[in-house]
Amino acid sequence: MHQIELLDRGLISMTKTENAFVDINNRIISGVNDRKNRLNDLNSRVQNISQRILKLYNCQEAMRVESSFNYPEISSVKSFDRRPHQSIFYDDQEKVAE
Image (cartoon, rainbow, N blue to C red; front, top):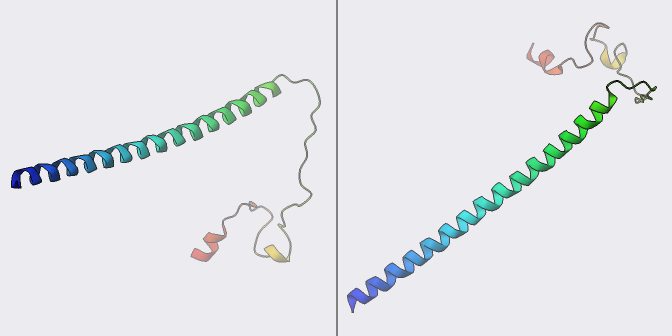
């Protein structure tokens, strides 16, 4: 009687372990597939952009380029400590560190 109960508990334990293994394995597989899909989407976007860039080579037609009407405020009150020769991408964290 005692041996049958031990065998039943061992069987239940093995079944639960197998179910946990299958669940973890399925989670890993779905995570990998999600990452593959994201990489494939990114790859298709890169290919699309590279094809557009390749079209621009040897282009003989005029091209319209638009930009925003807001320009960086290099010499104004808001940027009083910037010199005209400094980049607009000057890292403000460098001022904090000093």
